[in-house]
Structures are given as C-alpha cells and as structure tokens.
Amino acid sequence: VVGVERISETTGLADGETRTSYGVVFQCSNMARFLGKKTLLVDITKGVKGVARGIKETVRRMNIDFVVGVDVGGDVLAQGGEAGLRSPLADAMMLAALHQVDVPTVTAVFAPSCDGELTTEEILERISRIAEKGGYLGARGLTYEDVEAMSNALKYVKTEASMLPLLAWRGKRGIIEIRGGERKVNLSILSTLTFYFDTEVVYSLSFLAKRVADSESLEEANRRLHEVNVVTEYDYELQFVLKNKRD
Image 1 (cartoon, rainbow, N blue to C red):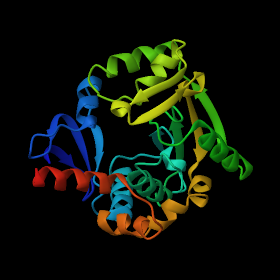
Image 2 (image 1 turned 90 degrees about the vertical axis):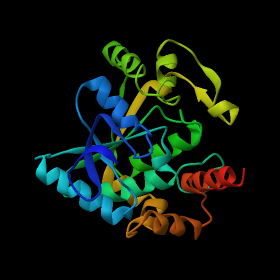
Image 3 (image 1 turned 120 degrees about the vertical axis):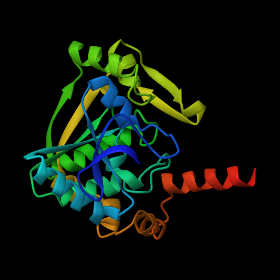
Image 4 (image 1 turned 45 degrees about the vertical axis):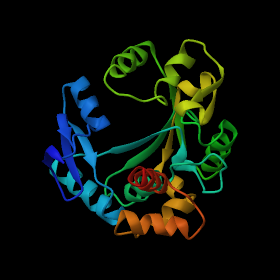
C-alpha cells in the first residue's frame, strides 16, 4: 500500500492519495478526500487475530474509548444459509475482531437489505432475536443534514448500497435492481434507518463470526466458512482473477 500512515501490522491511516502499488484507490481514500481528514484502513489478511491486535493497538495509540462498527445492508447478521448471501467473510471477521476489542463497542446496521443480499424479512428476524437477548439499543433515521452530507460524499465514494437510502428518503419504494441486475433490493422508508446493537449479543448469535474468531489469515477464515458450505466474496474474487488469466 502506497501513502498509508502505519499504526500497527494491520491498521493504518489513509488520505486521499493512498492506494495499492497497482494504482487501485481505496474507498476510504475517496472518503478521506471528501472529509479532508484521514480514514482508517484495516488489513484482514492476518485473520481475525491480526485484525483484533491492530484495532487494539489503534485504540491504545489514538486514545479511543468507544468503537462503532457499521455494516451497510446487514450481512453482519447472516447465519450462512441465506439464499442471497454473497459477502459474509469480511463482515464475520470484523464482528469477531470487534468482539475482542478492550473498549466498549456497538455494532450497527445501516440501510437494511440495501446491498441486495439478506432480505428485509431475514434482517427483521435477526433484529428480533437480538432484541430477545437484550441486545437492541435503538434506531435512528436519516435527517436532512445526514442526507445533505451523504449526497456530497457520494460525489467521491462509489457505492450503490449507500445511494439507495437517499432515494428511499425522497420517497422511492419498491424493487430496485443493483449490481448490473444481479441483485434486487426491496426499497422502503426502512432503508433510511440505522439499527444499533450490543456487539456481545450480536457475536453470541453469530455462527459465522464464531467460526472465524481464531483465524490467523484470510485464507484460514475463508477455509473455515467452506467447512460449513458457505461461499464468500473472496471465492468470487479468486474466480474472477482466474478467469481473467485464462482469457
């Protein structure tokens, strides 16, 4: 990675010029350009153990006393058998790492189902289970100021999932196709909400996060999900690379 301010073995601060040695610009670099401030870059190749060590070191060095992990769409609540699930690996790893952090944490889901993976019904069922365990902390809807800030941010950051809540805020509802028609989102005013949960309760209910909790590499975490027949985003990326090599 070029232009990163290293904090630990797996964390660093990115600015608007941070990119890979191949020239790929990170979304957090685009966000840093919008904010005019550095953003945190997390390397998951050292597995959950490496991520947890990195976050702990970041918390210590930057005097952070509270951490909020935000997932757009709600894949972090997945159990592995959902028909639309496509990207469970990084979410499970980050939830497991957040569970291991020494300071208070909260796990949040913004724009439920807006990534077209878990359905609205699946998300609401998971939220109810969390609430039954005392882990539901509340919800917050987008305000005018939020929408203005997000609209400006999207001039820099490219994301379909985070654009949809803005459409919902303006009254659009119904089935929306994303990812070139590969996924469908049932858009509604619910898409403008962020739900907040006790991380410990979310982790206690997460089969996938527990599977990868002791992993020491990305490959090991991926393999542990394979053992329970879960296909991940890493698999799709590897397939894409192999296909391009053959072509």
